[in-house]
Image (tube, rainbow, N blue to C red; front, side):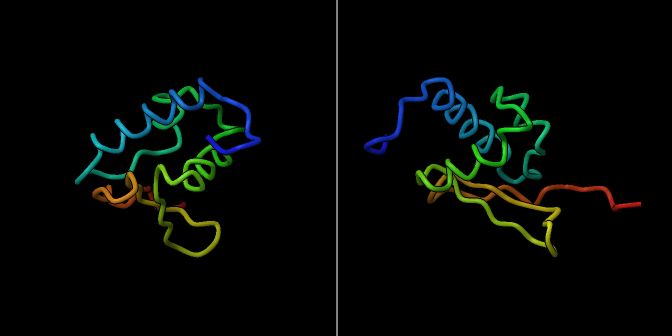
Length: 92
């Protein structure tokens, strides 16, 4: 935890769930936002900033592909193996 940053035990527990989910998705498509919300309990409104915090804290790495806004991503625990790119249906 950074100095000056309040303790967030619920979000830290959700980070543990996120690492487990990433481990279970190796060699499989990256979890969707809906799957991440289900596993972690993080709301859709908070999800983007929470993922950004995990990256800033050095817990996970995220890569995006596609033109903005990116439609596909892959994740890994820092130094671990990447998930495959998120499986997305074509926009119709």
